[in-house]
Image (cartoon, rainbow, N blue to C red; front, side):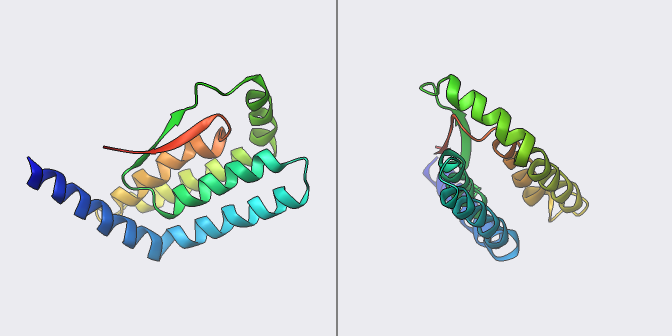
Length: 134
């Protein structure tokens, strides 16, 4: 059983390194730029915090998942609506398009799935946490 778990960790590491080299650094950089702009505008600081979380997740997605934060209140829901209208829909469409393009090849399927995993976070980032998969 320990060997299976060790093999899973090694596969996740390899996929994360390949993801970062080919896609992750650019996604993380885009989310970091969005965070910087959000922090400069002050009123959008919650979007900046969400963008930082997405930058980390988009740089190293394998072995992590998104879960709802039970402590998130109505303010995060309202802010998510603003996020969805201004940014979320086009970021989600970009992840969907990239995921479809990557799933065309067998080798790209894990990367396409990782892009599809980023869609819910891109649409509705506030009130969610990114946690490690056991």
